[in-house]
Length: 254
Image (tube, rainbow, N blue to C red; front, side):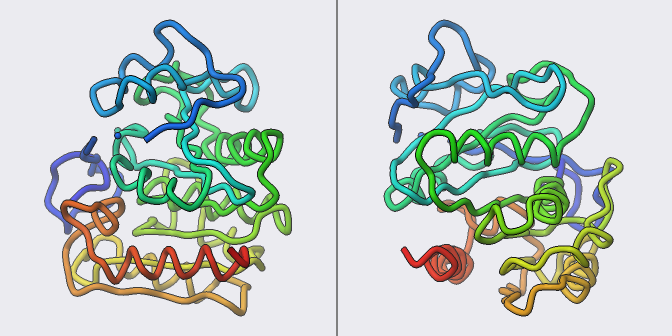
């Protein structure tokens, strides 16, 4: 249960908030020292804390961010509403065994200062940072609100990314229209959701149906679990984690 806070799984996206789990790190080339990202330190190891840096986002945004793992494939992680990059821990560490993982706090959330709420632009900024730091291929992955953001970002980025993963993303949230954007998403797209997550399951199905990509696999679990909980090592499902891994490897050849 998570989209936003601890609300029941059947409530609509705008009223729900997230949960936050907990750490593997590889220092980033431009890692900032000091207190960057201190609000996220509760979920991070000491090396991860030292590796946090400020990601330049759209406009004047500077976002708390962290990159772990190495390699030519980068997976960008976009968190849920009212959450932070900590929602992805420790799942992010398991991805970092195979890929570079870049996670960040949307503006006004976690350790990031308030900005203009251009969440798709912030996803794009993380993808650009990954490319500037050695990634040859980028996959966007978002949960709930983050799922909406990555779909809109994917429509804008086009062939600059290898694929996109939407876990429980609403069709429309915070001014972002994933349903409309889906018609311009031609890269492979993976969709995951809980069939009993009634506030979101229909949206995911509608967005998937509208997506222009021919390659758009789906993994549906009979559960009320939502977003990051679908892949969390503590709560989630091996079938979803396997589908995500298979998808990333398939679209990147890795």
